[in-house]
Image (cartoon, rainbow, N blue to C red; front, side, top):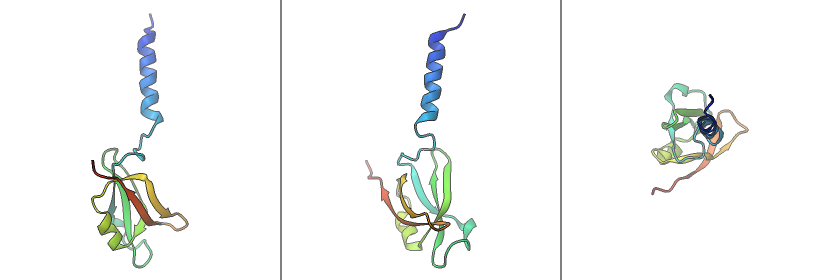
Length: 103
């Protein structure tokens, strides 16, 4: 005999886990960090940067910015979707980030 209530609950749980934001791009869990492995692959005067989410273990290392910007952004949390970057270049040059306010 099939347990329909259990099957419906499992289906609902599966859809919730995969539908919303599995990479956490809307969450204040991201930090900006320099990436030494990519030194030499950026424009002159810029350093390679990674946006990292240590909660979901995601990262995007397709960014570059100035050392001053990286120091200012160090340890500040933000949403991935709040990164303002020039996508016409590769790696993308970060123009700014809207940081989350601490609770």
